[in-house]
Length: 153
Picture 1 (cartoon, rainbow, N blue to C red):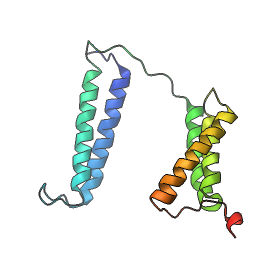
Picture 2 (spheres, rainbow, N blue to C red; picture 1 turned 90 degrees about the vertical axis):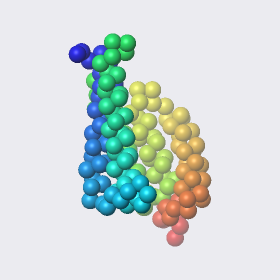
Picture 3 (cartoon, one colour; picture 1 turned 30 degrees about the vertical axis):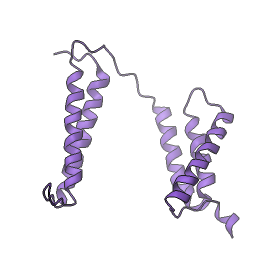
Picture 4 (cartoon, rainbow, N blue to C red; picture 1 turned 90 degrees about the horizontal axis):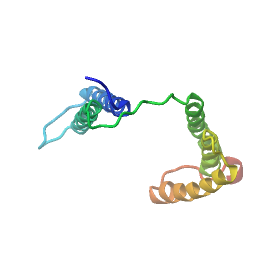
């Protein structure tokens, strides 16, 4: 058997791995039954479904009808910049609030792209700020600081 589509192979392996990890981690909770579900029932079933989906995707990687595809090299710089932006967001949120933190997140994450444009990043920031405010602060009523601490005192 020859792997024809490496994208499908590694996607399937990832789904299987996540499914198995979910199932293993949920073993510490009581499973229960379908009629009387315990706290471990849903993550176990979800992990099992994820693993089965992974098996199905992995099987398609070997199909002769599937197109051939190789996995490109990993963009380590881009990956690092995006992870850095998420870490900075988490660090800045308590002190700087949602407004500044979202702008920092979007602008720095946008720098990972080879087509970076500060204007487009700032426009995306405004759109995401509005959505974040409406969903998290107003809709879900999460207690995030909206503005930096020095502006609210």
